[in-house]
Image 1 (cartoon, rainbow, N blue to C red):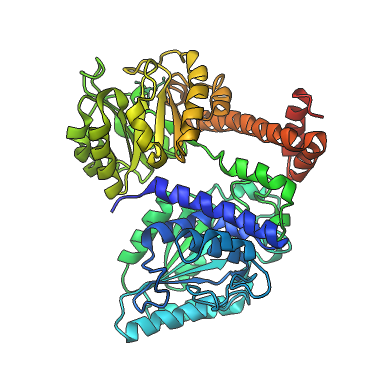
Image 2: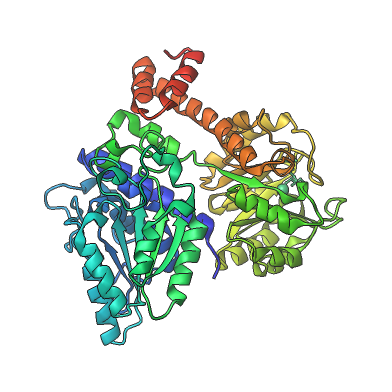
Length: 555
Ligand code: DX5
Ligand code: ZN
């Protein structure tokens, strides 16, 4: 079973937008903890959970217990996107008579547990896991607990019980976002080692410092530590949990409270607070502006691609971009599906296979079987019928569907009917064939033309910029609408990939902040620009954003 990366990504984006809509309409609610668990719920709902929204009480369904019940908007939004009720119902959140209350309630069909009184959801989960065993049922119980919630002694009683009764049909996620209602968890009741004097938002990056997992290990659990926003890591952890017999599994998921909206991220204020209506459109734009970095390994040592993949892993790449060249569609030859299959064993990071080959319809199956997560074929060598075939095959196999166009190619008319279901559009900004070429400036104008076609045809995918992307031009390429950035020479060609990726991210972030300010200025002039700036209270962000606004003469 393949990753289904873009399906999960799109589901999660929709759910996040509904969280904002619901909480804004209600005037209260908990965005922070809804966003920290967003990818976890996305992976569960899209890929792992067995459920039937038309028959919520189906006996064999998997059970999802949201123990940290205050994150109910996150649960309801996922349920809406998954089809339990219309998405518009999220606007009844917290209203009298609505089934969508501030905390999950059984009056909402599909909700398993009345969460909110913290500490109790895990005990309940152990109970239903045991009941499943007694009744010889195959269902799995997934439970989400919070780190603030772990202050409750009942969590640890339940932990002992689960281990004693070998509830291997129970998988728990600890949403480890380091923030609880009043402050940072480590200040109130530390779960990790003493972290005094540390920059709390930095410390999590050093996984060797995480001690929470050791607590659970000592209680007899199978423990897996992951980055709780990385879809591929969540997915791999769930697969491992399901395969583990004789003990329950705890997935310690390092997450960021308020993840995806810069002013909410890591900010305790957004534990439980509603965004104002005037900033909602800016927040939605920010949610639409998430981005991924995809190093292209052919820019490295072609005799040791294994090492290039390892460098991408330690550099925290979002994707690994694999440029397949057949010596026919382009003059060069690189590698084929056999190499991809070998590399696949090295990492779970999504493989973004860019097929610069003739007649891709004949070969696409091999690239699916090799373990690609996204496959992009060229418009120059496909037509309506062959691309339709490719697209169907990719979708059936949970692989993202990509189409690429060369610098001299416009989107062909036949492709319009695929636009709304396309996951990725690669806009080549060099003539394909090798890395290290110069970005073709005309691409900026082309992107403007493309954007209007894409909008008219309901594109909900991601534009990938490929060729000659570097620190100087990446900001303007983001402003053009690209959201995935291939980096050959500018990333793989560098000594320190991690630094290079970090620099890429910070350039994109600058451009993204500008985009948000443009929107604020367009919607509410100086007043809204100032309001937006002042939401950014942590660290030096506010100053940096203010500077951008001043340079743009918005304030
Ligand atoms: C070009 C490839 C690109 C290229 C990127 O045919 O599709 O992915 O390797 O390398 P740079 O970033 O160096 O142009
Ligand atoms: Zn490429």
